[in-house]
Image (cartoon, rainbow, N blue to C red; front, side, top):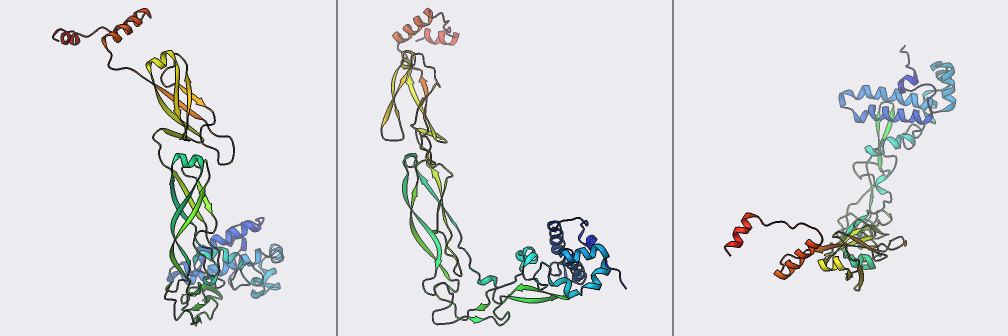
Length: 376
């Protein structure tokens, strides 16, 4: 008689392992040794290994059986419980593998415990890019967007069959959506290939939607874009995505905002930056300049005497509003002093005199410049 391996050794865990650790170990081994996930030549060995790890999990996941096993080993289990008893209450669907941990593991690999193709499914979300100007972002705007989305077929009402005709129960799975496949001493339920898990077939598909239950339609939707949005902002319009199937709810529409570049302004969160030129005289003696804002109005900015180039001035609350209703951003004005290029003789003399009085040394003309001047 072949000696049974220790259940803890089979699952690679210690006696003190928790139920979560037990489940994690079982998931890993079940995925590795499932008969349908190995080459045909290795299937028989995989069936034996899968049976062994499933039996170990069935015992150790039950508090009563685990206590008996810890105390008496296999003898305590074999004398008190039959194979049917061992698997009856295990957390994989009464040994038919229709739920519990088994569904958690194999739901993504084509296995199903029910008619998955006939379940209500929510419609897909949609995304649409909308470009707006700086001024629209500052004030808020309403835009009309055009999208293509799948909606429930108006002819068959989503039933997929031509009106006046009926659906037939799938002859393969008999309406269950799944079929049992024998793997050693147990049965695994798999999604029916004939009906795709729906449990029925459609002899006369709807001509309007070609049996899909949905059709693509162009829709115009009004979207309110709040003041203060920035490039990358996303707005969710509930229920304006694609229609669901089998009675499922609609998806949502996500509006992604992109700000168009502005010829004068740059944005930094809620603040804006504007570069303004000032004359050499304004920089020296001071004065006032008009500065544009996000509205149609301008504001006046006082330039102190002796202002250097690249000096930044702040005008409070002339930036973007905050979408959360907090304080408005500021307008930062960076001035750029324009240096005169083409001076008259008199202007040059006056500046040279200014330099002399200021104690500055003027650059002497080069030999090349002297020769040019001599031949003029």
